[in-house]
Length: 231
Image (cartoon, rainbow, N blue to C red; front, side, top):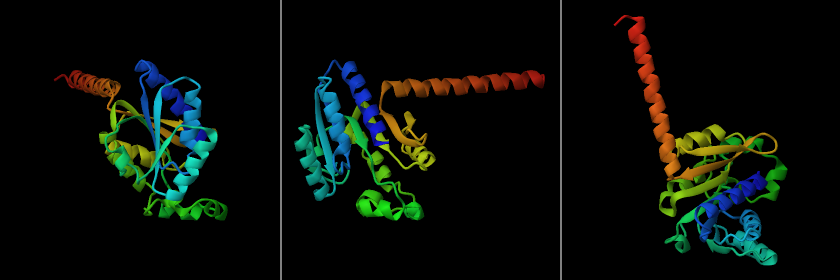
């Protein structure tokens, strides 16, 4: 699924760059961990001569140290900083064209599905976040709540989620006011990645079209009812 997120992100970065006449794009990864995602994306878009500034944050100083070392080793240009999601002084005045994330999504109700090998290779922070929640969506809620002040018209959020969380994620997006999104399956056919279009003119027209379709359906229903009942 991480490879899928990278592939989608690179494709979207190319599209955003083309639409904006190759202006410098601002890219952010939240919760970078080892830096594998953002580094992979950076190395790919560097080949395409796309102008960008890449940023990555994590709450864990040890993870950031590993990520910096990986980026230096691979000569990937990424600015790393410590913070919990958008709570980061270095991000205060920035707005981003693309935000990616793979937040902790294991909740207390999922513990029975974890194997010992899963737990032994990953820190608890990567599984549960700073505070465990029942359904594992606590960090998603926090990220979605902070998006408006960190994005602009046409920005994108791309993130991973648990294989069994598609319906919960969709409900959460709608609850938070995000109704223009796409879901993607991984190679195993499982729903694992979501792309959210933020504050775009496309979003307005999709909503307007949906509203007109609802109105037309209602009009046809009323007319049919009048005819059938000879009103």
